[in-house]
Image (cartoon, rainbow, N blue to C red; front, top):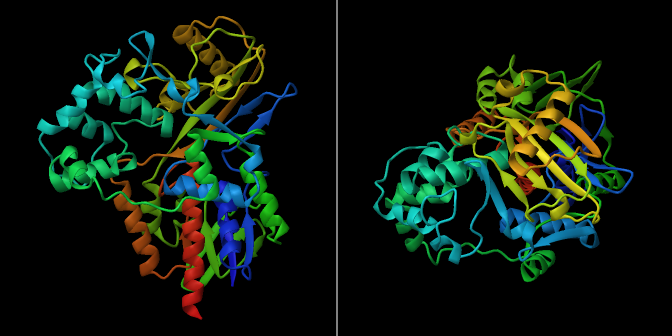
Length: 470
């Protein structure tokens, strides 16, 4: 059977890897519209050895999807190239928010729950205990802001959850579905009337899975997050080398301009060339796929189009030796009305020499167009980043090196109703017997682990269908 994979980002490359692992006899090809692979993951190494990460930079080792990635890393022989951040290090313990004109460290220990820590007006434990008396609300879905506000109070919604959503998906917590980050807690409320009751009822119902060898090591050594010595792009580049060595052709600059899908028939127009695999795995964004299927499948196109994306400006900066509070960095609550989503202290996370401080400023997201218009220049974005580093951190020194990147439509937004749309998308594909399988960040999670795990599930689903036809 022949399978084409649309998109050569981390998801598409991972899909090829797992297809090979499940069925080495498949004819697989990757079709990438741009001139490079790896998608939003890009590690730019400067002449002095400093790495500027444009997109994701770390991976969490926990959970089923986290251990799946560790197993992949182990299979690829990358264990010796890992650089972890351990739980005891400042980059793991010290997470901050900028609020009310100051940087504030978030509580990082159990004891911290019982202390009043600005910007909060009372100990965090008091907000958490509010769940016991909060009234429940029967809804199919709601924004994560509204959910947290109802159950725990406005301070937690404004100064914890809202900046967290900015950091995870550059989104507005007042639009993002509670099922994106707190699905289990939301279901506890809907089923039992409160989160507390749900936690008690399910205290011993924790799902366990056997850890990979590398997962055991990560747990034993208490990794908080990890990356690679040569940057996170090491991962997609290694997957690329692996699938190429197994004979998978990868066609760059092969942008799909037209797509025809009908039972047992796929036709992909690539400029003047047409390819017709027996099955298609789409790892491109739902917005891109929506445009491609509009003429033939308008209902599917509308469903896919509901999942919109946001644009993020990423400004990497290298300074001399700045005196900073040690930590991973800080996030900015939307309530502060700054153009900055957050700042990552890269050189604290992964030291690069005593005389260098590396920071990454993230701006825009759900507010990009309102803040910067359609096509801001590099100088405007750099100037804005420098201005707000001075406002938030007192940095007055000019950077020695910098890179400005505008990642257009880079992060999907799981707005209220997302789960329902995804279910309808799958129902449509199944009802119309389309030879199409979906993976990537548009559907089941935007993190590196989520994307890889979705690709594994997609590949295994395709192989399962093939076996069922035999």
